[in-house]
Image: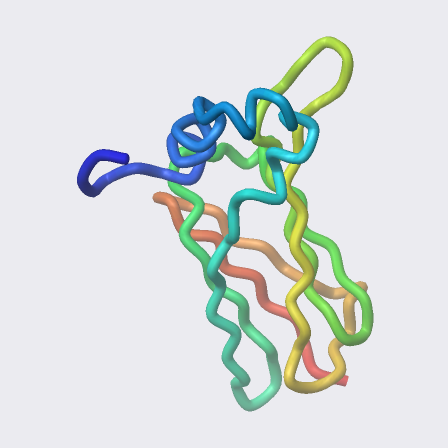
Length: 115
C-alpha cells in the first residue's frame, strides 16, 4: 500500500488485489478492523471512531445491554451488500434502546446512557 491518507475502503481494495483474496473474496469483510475508542463519562458510555468516506446510509449502529455494534456497508451490490460488522464491549451496562448517533466529517460518535 502507498503512503498515508487512505480510508478503510481503499485499504480493502488494496488487500483484495492479492491472489489470496481473489480466491476468497467472500471473506473480505473480515480483513479490516475498525479501531474505536470507548470512554466512560459520568452518565454515558461514548464510542468514537473515524469513518472517513462513509455516508450516514453506510453506517448502522445498534446495541445490547453490554455492547455497541457498528455495521458499515463497504459495497452495494444487486445480489446483496458487502458489510463489515464489529461489536464493542462497554465498560458498564448501557440502555441500548436510547443510543444516540452523531455522524459528521469522518467521525462517528455513539452515546449510550449507563443503566
